[in-house]
Length: 318
Image (cartoon, rainbow, N blue to C red):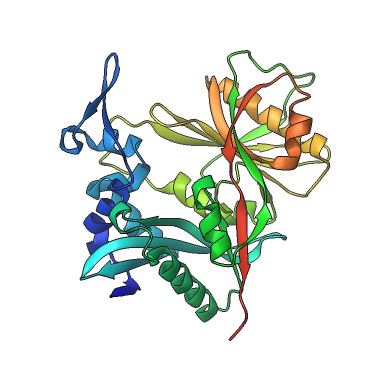
């Protein structure tokens, strides 16, 4: 019988096993590239490369502790006292159309136990938790492979985003200088009245969490977040750029108000200019699907990687 309970840091190893099951091949980093290897051969850094903080006990336990301290909630599904799935949730309040909501930070089922309704039970547990907190919206940014699942669970398409890769080997040249300020680590209050539009893989609080947590067991993974405030006559914005030596560089942009797409794309290009100044030659981000036609009019070299749709479920109050 499948049961759902709240997770603790003591579940870190079992949660790691759930995420490890999703990896088809493990690869070790060598001077001439990668070679297939056993999990036990890999360093904590090399395990991180395959899926982040959940890939090793050493980093997963840090994540669970910090995620809970940030106000997140984790539920695990157990079968015969073995953890076979988990869901991580964090509440946020952003400008409309998002408003107050509960966000599904991650949902993972052990590969050997998929197709048994475990994901559905975890989602329903999330909905019950939202109701208990008086939150009537659940949002999730879905991978393409999970679209059918969320539709089956009664979730409706909310927004369409596209994950893109931008090649910056040709330096960005601007017609006018960028007026910007380098910021220290940003907090929720710094972006409270801003809309996260570019790089909306997650909601605002989740992104700020990712940018804040440090994992001391990592020895070779360089990952740093740089924050800037852009001053524009019509569109103030906050830009965060992730620079890494092992995972994708990435960019995220909050804007103070919704404006015409051309203005937002101009801000996006200014963000790429700042990425160039950090010696970044390639990065990923995601954009609202309706921005693509305007973005294609620029001279940027970009590649569409996948769809990144957002789904919503509005809950009836009990």
